[in-house]
Image (cartoon, rainbow, N blue to C red):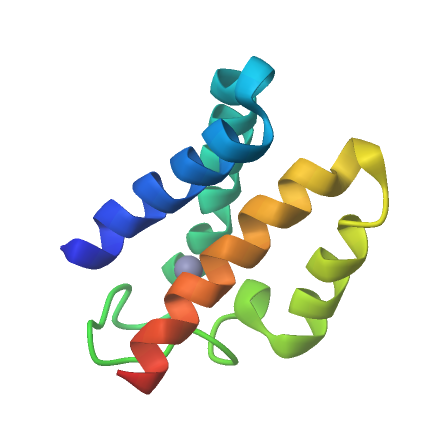
Length: 97
Ligand SMILES: [Zn+2]
């Protein structure tokens, strides 16, 4: 449950700190990046709290995460890449704790 709260709060803080004039739009875009979790629908069971998402789901694969990092280089995709990386870091925390 705390995990899901983090998925909302962390992007909100980033949006307020770095995009203060456009924080709402930035936050909403980052919220849309949560759609990457749709790849969970391909897995059985769809949700397993003990499973590490990173490397398991196709959109949570390290190769794809490298693409998300590249998106930071371009102003038009930066906010999307940022949202995706925050998502991967938060999902990754579940793997180490
Ligand atoms: Zn995820």
